[in-house]
Structures are given as C-alpha cells and as structure tokens.
Picture 1 (cartoon, helix red, strand yellow):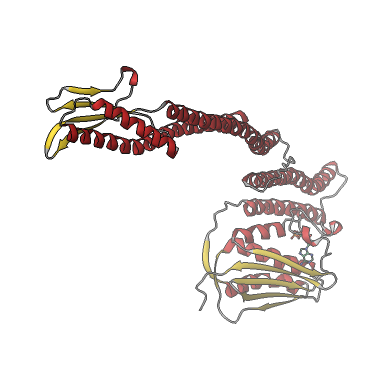
Picture 2 (cartoon, protein in one colour; picture 1 turned 180 degrees about the vertical axis):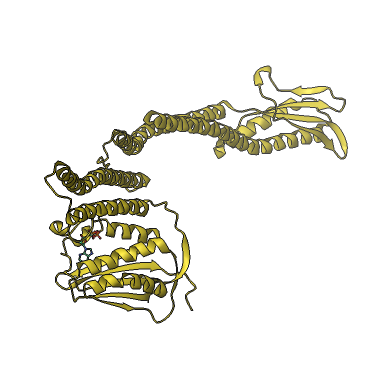
Length: 454
Ligand code: ADP
C-alpha cells in the first residue's frame, strides 16, 4: 500500500515534469519565432523597397547585389542600435523570365521554410520575383538555446524538488493511511480469534476514525452477545437445577420409603413442576422477545378496551390480596397497531409484578394517556419500591432485586426482559421510576399512528 502510493505520486510528478519540459520547449521556440518574424518582416520590406528603387533608377536588376549588401548592413546597424538581435536576410531575385539574377543563399543555411516570395511590380509591370529568407543569427540561436537550457534546468530542479517532496508527502500520507488500516486489520484478526474485547484507538478525525468507532461498536456488541450467550446457558442451568433437585430428592425419598406420598408432598412436587414449565415458557417468550426479526401480527386495536379486557382477567389476583386495582382510561378512544398476544404478555408481566410485589391492602393503578405522538401505558403500585442502584439492572435477564424472595414470590427474573423486548419490537420504550418504600411506576411508551381522532 505504502510503496504503491509513493510510486504513483512519483509517476505523476515524472509525467508532469516531462510534459512541462516539452511544453516550455515548444513555447520558447514559438516566442523566438514570433520575435524574429516581426523584425524580419520590416527588414524584408526595406530590402524589397531598395531593390525596387534600384530598378526604377537603373532600369535593370543588374548589379542589384550591391544594394542588397548595403541594405543588409544598414539593417544590422539599425538593429544593433535598437538592441534587437535579428539575423541577416538572404535573398534570391529572379528576373521576369524566371532566371536567377541574384542569389545570396548558401547551402548550409538550413531551414528555408520562412521564405517570403513576392513579385516585383513596378507601374503594373512584373519585373521579377523577390524571395527572402530570414536567417537566425548566431546570437539569436545561442540565446534561444541558453533560454531553453535554463528553462530545462529550472524544470529539472523543480522536478527533483517535487520528487523529494512527493517522497516525503507519500511517506507521511501512507503512514497516515496505513497505520489505521493495519490497526483495523490486526483488530479483525484478534476478533476472529475470539478476542472480542479488542478495541482500536485511531487518532484522526476522518473516515478512519468513524471506521474505528464502528469497529469498536461492533466488537462491543459481539462481546455483549457472547457474554449474554454464556451467562444465559449458566443461568438457565442454575434455574433448572433447584426445582429438578427438589423433585428428584422428593421422588427418591418416596421410592426408598423415607417419605410418604401424601397429598401435601405431591402438591409440593407439582409446584416445582409448575415452576419448571413456567421457566420453560418464559424462556420461549424471551427468545421471541429478543429476536429482532420476530414477525409481529399487528392489528389496529383500541387500547382502552384492550387494557380493560386484561384487567378484568387479572382482577381475581388483586381481590385475593385485597389490592385496589384502578384503571384510568383516556378520555378518547386511542387506536394503535399492536401484536395483541405480545402486548398482552407485556401488560400481564407488568401488572402481575405490581400485584405480586404490592402488599395486601395496597393500590395498583393502570393508566392510559396520550403524550405527544405516543400513547403511554403506566402501571403504578404502592409496593416496596426498588433501590435506585438496582433500577438500571431490573430489565436484565434473570435479575432479581431480592434474591432471597425469589422462590416464594416472583419468577426467574425474566418478566421485565420479556416486556422490554416486546415493547422495543413495537418501536416503543419502557421506563421505570421508583421510590423506595413508596412504590414503583412502569411506563410503556408506544408510537401512535397518525389517524387517532375517533
Ligand atoms: P420476576 O419474574 O422475578 O418478577 P422480573 O423481570 O419481572 O422478574 O422482575 C425483576 C425484578 O424486579 C424482580 O425480581 C423484582 O425484584 C423487581 N420488580 C419488578 N417489578 C417490581 C415492582 N412492581 N415492585 C417492586 N419490585 C419489582
């Protein structure tokens, strides 16, 4: 990666250097050519004038070469005075019949492409042809060469500096790019070996940082999931062990004759069997509640009626404990889209807890109200309340606030996890507030659809 980056940067600079050099070379030639042609045009015109005047005064082109010499010398003197550096103009003059009268060109003159060829016309009569070849002077050629050379040297120097800079920048950039990448690669390797607690620290503010954060989030989730998976198996085994041990020892004692299978003993065993089947049922609900892909069978439901139906089913439990069970329904009908079975489970778990943990003669209130774009179902009890420090954990699986009470009252500590899971699948939220010694309130917040007017 690093070498690729440096090579590509250097290649770009080499190409740019070559391109610049060629470009400048051709520009320099063009500039010099233009410079020449402007002053040459003047010189050619002057020589032509001199030749014409000579013809007018002598009536022939015979001996015109002297004029050419004089004109060229004059031109050179003038240029010297003006600081120009043009070259001489070589000339070929043909007479009217096309015969060469004068030819000052030499064989080693080289480039003859910039010739000017014009007829010599006097009073409408063509007396011959005038061909002029501007010749680059040595000084001009030297100057052009020097200029081109110095441009090339400058380009070469610039090129070397650019290559050096590209190496430095390339090294710096590649380090910046490859460092977080190699950190991530080694992170991925560690995670694939099972080290889900591996985190990367990327000290940049770019996309690599985002990538690093995403990676860390992913490993956190993996670690949590892994922890949950491990603890779930341990917790389930733990929960199963107690009732199974009780059942087994009771049955063995009956078998050995040490215990009589009285009605009370059988009731005791069947109690444990009930606990077991409740645990299995809870576990099944939990696995549903925690599967984020659970398909809900949502139906448009009027929430006050829905709550009333559940409350009437559970009333016996409140009556048994002499608990006043109130329902404050909302003043209007509220329709929401819910999976009734799952939401019944949520309400039963919360109301069940409220009734279970509230002492006799207490009060449990269920309320339905609209808050903004949500409907809030709250369950308020006058139970013992929950310690503030323990509140953040009560939605965790197998969490019980009071371990010692677990076998007589309450279940395996799954009810709230199940409720939370189902509420979240509905796009809602569940909250708890509690004051020790005064009571606890659970709130289920569910999103309202846009059409609640009836
Ligand atoms: P469980 O099946 O044991 O009731 P939950 O998940 O439903 O498990 O509840 C977890 C713990 O939260 C319970 O063990 C209990 O200590 C506490 N809890 C739940 N609801 C209430 C409540 N209304 N009042 C007091 N404590 C509660």
